[in-house]
Amino acid sequence: MARLIIAEDETHMLRLLEMTLRKHGHTWNVCRNGREAVECARDNAADCIIMDVMMPEMDGLTALAELKKMEHVRDIPVIMLTARGQFIDREQAQSSGAAVFLTKPYSPTELLNHIQRLTTPAS
Image (cartoon, rainbow, N blue to C red):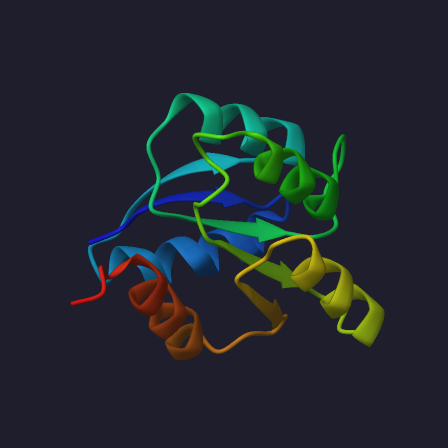
């Protein structure tokens, strides 16, 4: 099971994420903005980060850029979740180092498949 960091400011989206992840035995730390996500990644071991794009204080794309500057966390895969599905948003996330870009509403099965793929060591 994966150790995750979830950066999501919308309570109902957070609850949906938690229900999905709990059923599959994952553990996680919750952050309510990008700044908290950067601090949490710095201070806690994680296998993957799930991050909303639009958040207060520091948006997800800025937080992603900050994470990629930090040597000990830059290789943690980041799954970006957003209600904004424009091509430019996807392109910016991928060019900044996001492993996956999912548009809300997302498929829980698809999210779980990405988590498994990103956190399972290659054999």
